[in-house]
Length: 432
Image 1 (cartoon, rainbow, N blue to C red):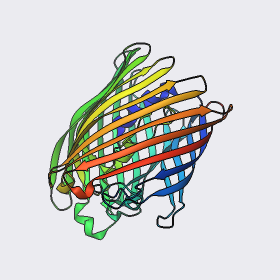
Image 2: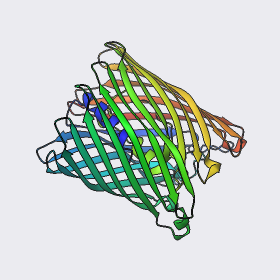
Image 3: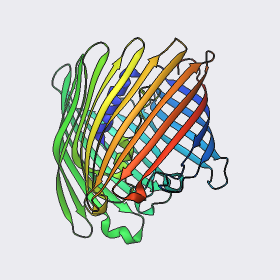
């Protein structure tokens, strides 16, 4: 699943990895003045939050692996809200059965997503999701500049509340790769996937999906680019048949020694499982203080949708000031569940300033506009915050953050304002 996106992300991430293992432990206390995001009856809540953060990448003679994630336990001091385990992470492990020729892959992606994407994301409207994939990959050299890679995967997707998401998949893919120069290569890619939902009522929605596309990769000293173009076909068991385009591009350009421009374009079929994989944390950039605030959610459903998306970002890293500015536009058209059709766009800004060698100030601001086509509903969500961090000792630091969320909507029942204050004590071993 998501072969092109996965290849791009893993390839770009490798440049920034500082150490095989980075980890940390946080102990936080957070107070919210409207934990339920209610428009008229706000309820305050305080939570104690121990968290484990980990990022790992390594390769040996018979293995290679990567792991990134945050795993937290929320203990609410008030009895009205139940305690929660929250995790967001990705893990990959390849058993190199015959290095350079054959390996067996294991992948797992866990997350937290809304049960109902049309409602505010509160503790009661949150569910655990999981996507697991395993299978072999065989690579055959067809010459000094050409190779054939074939993949077989068994994939499961589950959610603990939305049973319609639970499915089993079989996937086969082949990639013919040819080096066309020291910095670039072409590829011909084909794949087929058979999706079977576990709920009997969804059997008519079982489908087979086929994709074929040409790919191009360029990895130069300043410009890194990957692009693909082709087509997709879906055949549902109830007789429906869809043909859609497949196009994707992702790149980064080093504008200067301190500035970097990134972009991403998508126009292709997607489903919730692929979206969860695409949004998984990256171990190479997991501890980057400019990682940003991700307010995007995934619609957990059995449906397939046409996804058109554009993202643009710019990162500046100076001696004391670092900043990330970005924006996105996204259009989702579902093949069946058209009440989820939506258009969304918005900017985001992250700034980090080193006040002293031991003290830093940071701020973030995002603004999202989402329009739902079926209901003509329009939401405007702003999320803003400031924070200060201070290093107490070599491994210990303390942080204080204030954040505010405010949503206005054409549906008054979806309007809310929330203020949060978070105090955190952090431990980071050397290198994290």
